[in-house]
Image (cartoon, rainbow, N blue to C red; front, side):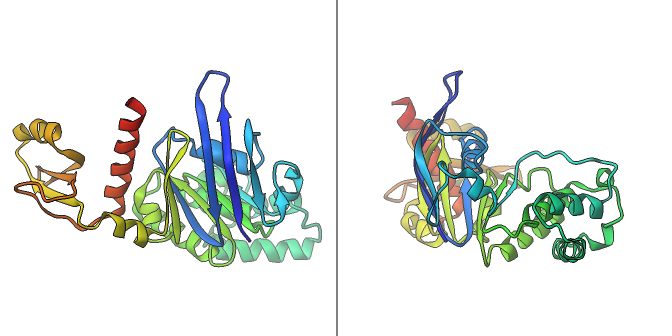
Length: 294
């Protein structure tokens, strides 16, 4: 099953162009949609989830024309938005039972078995009698995934799911997504490079409503090999280097700035740098800013 997005465009009434001809092909497994805040990721997620209409373009999921038959997609969709509200006083088990009933699991025995299975899958079984309001941020996100999975979706969309999570919860949540993504299409939207670096078979970098780059992470990294360089610099020299080199990023290591630059040949005093997805991300965002300013 493939999700195919073609030439989606969306401009809001205030003039903001959120989608500017986005096209993507997403197959089974985890697909990472990487971009800064305001890149258009959430607009794209809501549009695919049939929560808003684009100005133009098309979306297909398998043989389904999504924009013409939104109700058909909703039967196959699990969606975890960036923010979602739940009744804080309800227990975890009761909340999940409620949503399972809303998704059409009418038989009480089947629903109980499903709720138990989802609680175990998301590592929430021991917390099943706790009130939703008492859960940590990571536990609430895992409950959100359990709710999204209650209808046995073929497409799962998660929008900025690890924002605000501590490292342990973030690691646990991403491992859960990777496990789920072995059998269905999972679309993960995030501005955190580490969320997609190791887990996603395919990624796309988006900015200002456009796809800047897409493909397999290893293939993308290979295109930048031999073109990235690094050097420890004095803080006083940094403005001069930024004026004469294409600086991708600067990082403080033990309080000392290290500059990463892009160049077809080795700049004097710089050492070769093995490409990292974060370097590629910053390189393409900076190039897009220059193109937009030209």
